Image 1: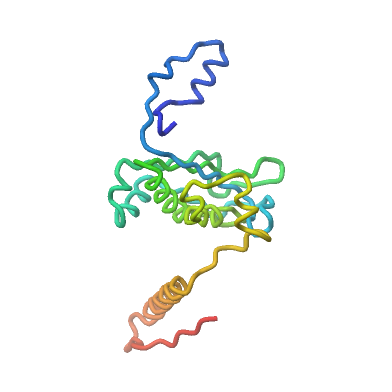
Image 2 (image 1 turned 30 degrees about the vertical axis):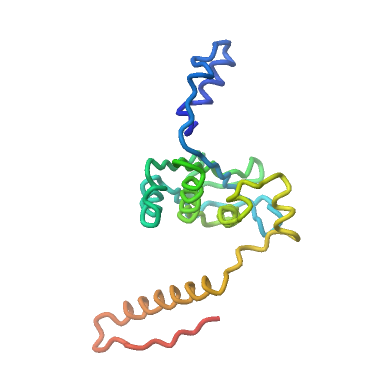
Length: 210
């Protein structure tokens, strides 16, 4: 729909009612590239088993936030960007065993596949779900997977690339150092805030990580 500008569901309903299509194939124009990630309440670390629970915190990514983040590193990829979330849930909704565990369909649209991938990565990074297991971590890792980036994908991708099952994202050495630095900065900020208004503020902080 995003690449064609057409409401495909509307067209399907009209055809189902016996109407003819309002456009011809020659009138369909393709603009850019779109990707869809299906966000599920399922646990990739347990063989993608469905997860039940309550959405204690639920924040969907928006076009403004995602495009703004991407623009800081790749302004061209952010041009004309669209982020669309088709969902039927909200914060404090319950995900039960009685229905399909899909939470939403997250779609990004950019000028080309590379832009759509960058937008999807940023959108998944800013999608907040707390209260139950979900597959955003797995979807986010796929955005960085060489085979997915190249488009060399098939129905056996997970079986071949994640032998023995998905084990979660593995940080490399540089990412571990970045994470430690962020943790230290957060801890320092908390200590400074706790000492606000006192005669002296600590200038050194022992950082204990485990």
